[in-house]
Image (tube, rainbow, N blue to C red):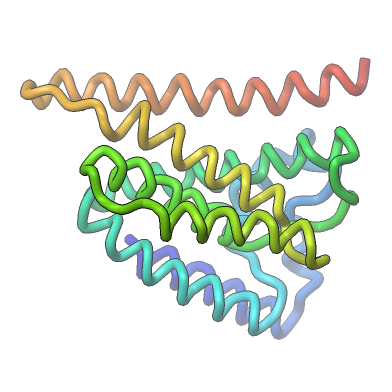
Length: 208
């Protein structure tokens, strides 16, 4: 699944290199995702330029292959999409509250930070050293604040989403497979619904 996600991102990167404006309907744009909600997910597969796509794909390959072996392809995909959604919602939240300047946002980095957040939870539960991952997450958030063009909101939102999803959905274990599967489906549905409702309510509050 990691390579499939990378393939999709690379496909759109080629299109961006040829005709960048054709992908505008898939970028995360200030105030637009309320009416065009697909942007909350599609923006995680879009990239601005060669350096952007190469760096993100390298990081995705490193952390994605490790996590996919741990979780399996289905759980990994669910985690990736949830982190993408969480990153986008937090970007919208930060821009609406004027914590950052409104701008187009795209890239897999928010979801990738979510994958590192998931590793943080897993390693902590396994009593493994988590300091390197924690330092990496902090650096990525701070770098976005210091350097323009890097979405600290996406990095932070993705990391928080990954931590939440892993702690609530993926980590709880039961011996009964059917009970575990039912819980994970229900928990994923509830968390996703809360994110979507939070995004809708956020805009409703500003409109009113």
